[in-house]
Image 1 (cartoon, helix red, strand yellow):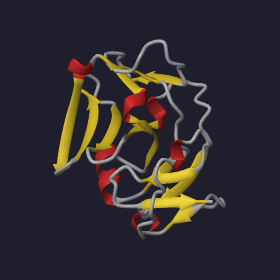
Image 2 (cartoon, rainbow, N blue to C red):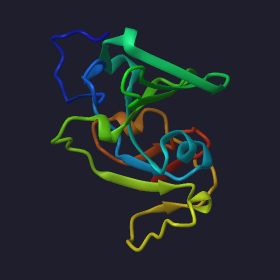
Image 3 (spheres, rainbow, N blue to C red):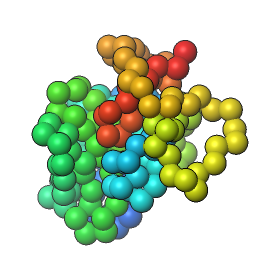
Image 4 (cartoon, rainbow, N blue to C red):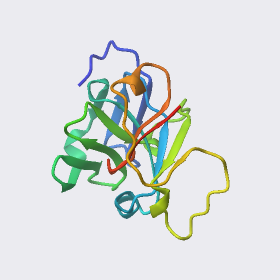
Length: 165
């Protein structure tokens, strides 16, 4: 839990309202991930932002269910309505948050598309947003959380890291 006197940058929660969260630090630009794992979990490409774990406060944690198919990696959803909310790698200081779970106005910007080589055959990208096909790109330590919203981070499954300058 974070200190309630901290500045609130965003709030959000699940569809039924049993799980709510407050973000007290800067959020990373939104990453759209097309890896097989993310598509299987969410039924399509995932759209996530991220925040330092210490800047995230969750209410209704008893309703939060965690699923792990890889050691050290887990995904959190509401146990009642099933809304996908979080993704985390235990070894990293940040938690990814599904962008659709954040209350509007979000103030978020779009960062990049990742794992385009694994995108579903029905998906056609016609715009000029940055795209990362399928390679790993190194995330620079803490720079994505410096207060400047940059297109830096990783996809939801953690297989791809990227930096778009």
